[in-house]
Length: 338
Image 1 (cartoon, one colour):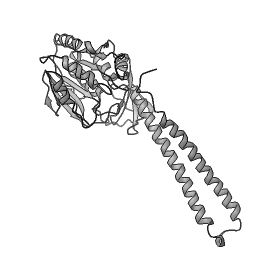
Image 2 (cartoon, rainbow, N blue to C red):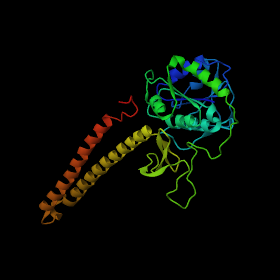
Image 3 (cartoon, helix red, strand yellow):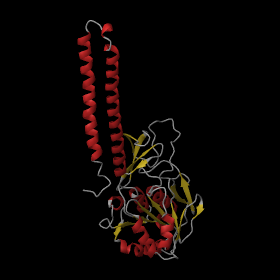
Image 4 (tube, rainbow, N blue to C red):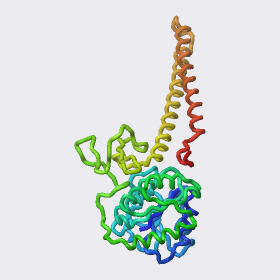
């Protein structure tokens, strides 16, 4: 099983790899790329080399010498010789996610899995690559020095023991060698009904502090996507986070998602303060408009309330300026590591 994942800057490297793969390659090729809804990736890859590429259908039988691409909005699992599609919760803020595909391949064919990580931002694919390595599979990574976005390749190298960085011009050759090694291994694929990755639902338990078997500890962190409680899962070289709904985050993806949530909450605070100032001014106009109904202490009361309304408006303006500055300098988590 050959599984290839990437994100920003990965389409052209993928085209070059597919161009150099033989038409009789002894592996099904699964591909998950973070691309837009109107992707023509199957047509592009089919024209690039001898292998036919398609957006895979649910429960489609996987055959050697074909490319199966995860369609937009669906996670791609490989199990018991079939491609399974699922609209389950996003992983690393993506659906489809590379981690889901890698993890399912590692479960099904274990040491006969070959995972390839191409250019991309943040760290989708790192946890999946670590699981492939843990299962005895092989992990190849586009040389980060050549990648347009090197965060995904670097993250996979750091997370997966034995992962190898390979120059793009040599990747197809290395893949062919890995396929030969995988073919020499024996063992029957076994389907794991429990699943892993995004195939997660809340366990029916009377204990609110329950942990799944692979989870290490509960945290005080909340899920950026749904607000649910997060558990931490520890692997030898990487830890990641999962909520009980099924959203899952590698470390850099988690930090980036939390940064987006923080900005959203700050803009919410700006809106609340500006609305508070507006309603205070509205109340002042109604209370102190006609002089003939004004109370004797009108001037003192009006001055105090005007001062309070202006103070709220001033705080709103200061916070708006700070949040705008925040927005003008977005998170650098997805760019080249410092």
